[in-house]
Amino acid sequence: MKQNQQIFSIDKLISEARRLAADYRRATGKSLGISAEIARHDACVLLNLEPVDDAAIGYDAVGRGAREGERVQIKGRAIFDETKRGQRVGQLKLEQEWDKVVLVIMDNEFQADTIYEASRTEILAAMDRQADSKRSKRGAISVARFKNIGRQVWNRDEGLIQDEIWDNRA
Image (cartoon, rainbow, N blue to C red; front, side, top):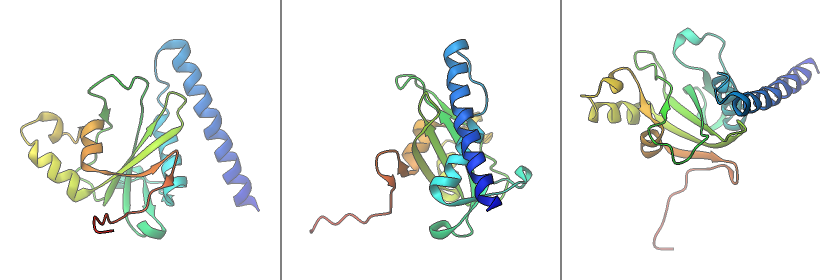
């Protein structure tokens, strides 16, 4: 029973953090700096991931179910202006051991809107194609590029998106 109470209280705290972050942004025009924790919570709940406590290991969660055993870095980005270009994902830990990165895109109320996922292989290949860029050497990637190399695995309207094989013969 205690575990259920703890989960409820964490959900309630995250809900309050969303409200505070949105209110702070409206009042000051600045971010409160808690979107990473909100994104981590949402990714774990929505994608069935188990959070890890040691951030120094290079990943934020370990997969369960369909992602069983996969080591996942979690990144979050609140998008306040869809027309603004050049928005970036937080720095990826390229030197660490991990299997996938998920990017939680949040709206101006810090609610998860979509989640994208890319494998280590896909990300490293994209970084190699952009090898002359100083940003890629530091593990920086734009939101647009991440969306291009990754795949959408969750959205607010559909929930979890299962891999589908398209068949043009049907």
